[in-house]
Length: 282
Image 1: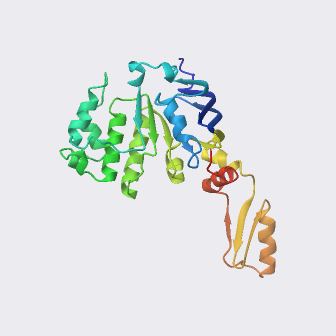
Image 2: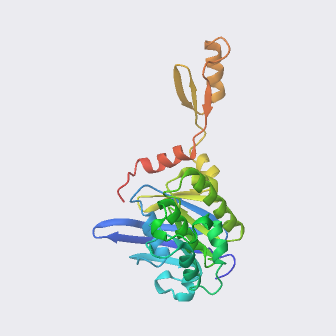
Image 3: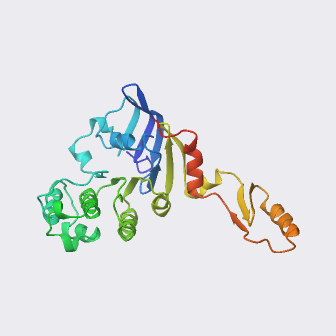
């Protein structure tokens, strides 16, 4: 694997469960040092894709390389180079936070300092508490700690802020930005569009088992075309010529147009337009 090769390279990935096709020839590249957010409705294939990349699930077809290795034949040394934060909170309920993070540090050749990791996820005050007594959001922070303790080159974050309150989410975002600044490659799946906008260098939208679009948030917005929404008291219109419309409205209202707003499509508007026709059954 050279410095210019993608950290993750997927071509023609397919996966079915029974008669249901979940992945239908998915292609995806994740570049070294970038944070890629993956969006998609429930059932679109996000989690299945991530589990295949993590070597937790087999595939039916296609080519997959993660850190230069096919996950289907990956060894322990390869696993030590990745970090994983799953959707489900830790179930190590009888161990304290410090015991758990310290124990997992022993699995890696060059782990981070457990105390520093506990502090970075905001659990210093709870370090001696048993995990079973933590809140749901605090247990998610333990999951994040276990995902980063090994200094991963590639970090998978699958819905990592589920259960976080707004303050905890912002703290977690700072943590992810810090990891990205250190050069960690991050693949993030999330349902929160503001999270994708805040953290991702690029965003991939998965729908119907394929990547429907990929690019920066600005590029995805631009894909919606030049139309903007013009609204005013008593009316609304989508147009590619907002200046002409506003001039006409100004003439009609004798000057100032009451309640006038001009809005370009948001990332949410673009996302919903991409998945709207495809639904959530894939």
